[in-house]
Length: 213
Image (cartoon, rainbow, N blue to C red; front, side, top):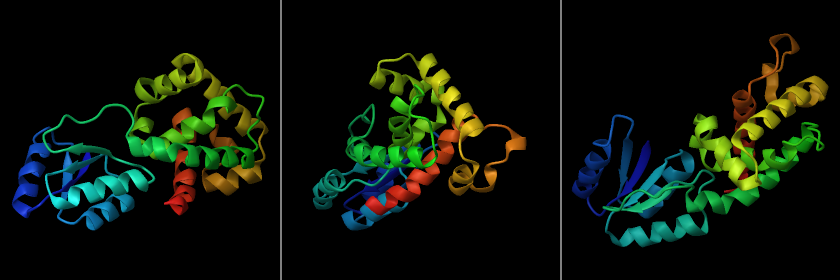
């Protein structure tokens, strides 16, 4: 997990960086002493965690992350606290904006509104943009989350999405698919998996969403 640490001094930052990296090899971090520099790093590259050490700059960064969160917002935690669970607050703040973009993209792709997955796909795709780790574990995290939000079972979410992908690739306009997904669209290679389809949606939405930040 990538983390940004805002500290008062380099020594304090190194101490908390070592604390985070001791959690496992997957942890990587950067230390900043100014809120502006930390915020810029969070906007330019996705980090899952922003750790605020006791310092005058901490409140400034926390407030800015609430008022204008990055497109893919991190969990914000105080040094010494347990990391939050669920979706980051900043991700929820961005979700509605990205969902609107997602609906527009699905219409442009000529996805059929009559399909059951139409009711949740815009939300699902937006969730992968504002919180990218969800795309790494569809069955363990994304499908259950979408199922809870839309009154379905995870298995029904997976089946409905598969039906929509197959229908879109079989009946959708090839020119529209090529415009959004480029040369990856090839009838002879077969239809993409659910994950591949969501990953392509996430890429397009991320590019469009950065204009909102």
